[in-house]
Amino acid sequence: MTSVMWFRKDLRLSDNKALAKACEESEELILFFQLNPEQFIEGSPNHQAFFSSVAYLKKQIDQHRHLHVHFGNPKDSFKELLKAVPEITDIYFNTDETGYGATRDQEMRTFFKEQKIQVHEFMDGYLHGAREITRNGNYYKVYTPYYKKWIEQVKESPIEVNLSKTTVKSQLIFEKEEARFKTFCEQLPVLDDQPLGEAYAIERLKKFVKEDLKVYDQKRDIPEADQTSRLSRHLRTGEISIRTVWQAVQKAPNSTGKTTFEKELCWRDFYHMIYVAFPKQKEESIQENYRYVEWENKRADFKKWQAGQTGFPIVDAAMRQLNETGWMHNRLRMITASFLTKDLLIDWRWGEKYFQQMLVDYDPASNIGGWQWAASTGTDAVPYFRIFNPTTQSEKFDPKGDFIRTFVPELKAIPNKFIHQPEKMTEAQQKEYGIQLGETYPLPIVDHKEQRKRALAKYEFSKERAQE
Image (tube, rainbow, N blue to C red; front, side, top):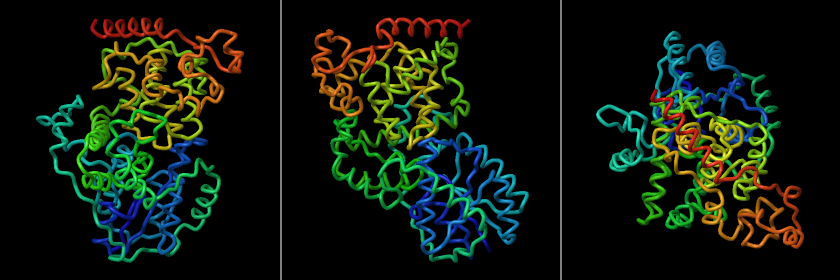
């Protein structure tokens, strides 16, 4: 029989459930990737990063076999594949449970059934699927009790993949599509010098476990230290499997850093479960009490936030890091999200969509979950009356201003006592340090204390309205 391995967010040849089964059970196997132009976000680092990883996988496979590609919506692409190879009997893929992927998979199950093609699908992207950890059949809404049950569950081990067990079809199927893909890849800008692919992801994992895991709890909140795992980009594309990550972590000696990192992996599963439980969460606040917040949504303020021109150095440094690198430190994601929603009083959905465009490690469930957490609208969110003070956050996590100076060079000569609040400098001091506030660096665009009061009032009003 001829089968198809349909790659999606699992761009690797090892520890891949669907690929392992396809190799075991198929006489002939077609390796296939389908590109849907309707999903493209042109000019987006998110888009560029993902398809750069696809191109890397194809180059890797094409050295000895072939990854066939086709542009179009899934149904049309598979119609073309079936027209070219009518003897296809089985399809293997790792399922999506959320967002566009869930809708696509449901539609394609129906299509494959109509075509009399046997579907083999697997939960591959998480340590535990959305429906594995429940309380009396109901989804958890709070992280801590979810974690207590999650940590007790046995985690799967990596899966062995043996491509030599089957014949992989290497004869070209879509000549024009291959040429189109080549042109498509040539037009992808180079984002950074970070290597791609599963080999690099595994080396990155080994380095993190050996050098940084034990102090992860102490260093993870310090942007300048940059001692987070940096695996999110590879987990997002599936260049490394979550099982491989978990196994490597378990082999490390026990430490508070190890425990803290395990909790972060649990957050990933938790947010995925929440997205399944609340499929409308990308556009709708989960907390009904806060669906009536009257956002001010000042476009000019939003643009200043995007550009890193708010006059709050830690916020500006974080946004510039995002714009320049396509990545942002996790502590800074919380600070910038809180600032946008609680200080600028701008709808969290605006920020979520901007992060979707810009992040090379964009994961819908985690990103939406993080934004709803910061905006106090999610199922297990920071209470609305706990509002990050960007200045105290800056003083705590970038005490000497090293990270700020890296991404806000206008402030490079500012002494530590002014680095978090340059607006406190006198005109004479500004002249001494070569800066002119309002010209070479902006004055704060809002007063944090006043905005905090306004935010509290807006959330209180929303709560009252929801309870009418």
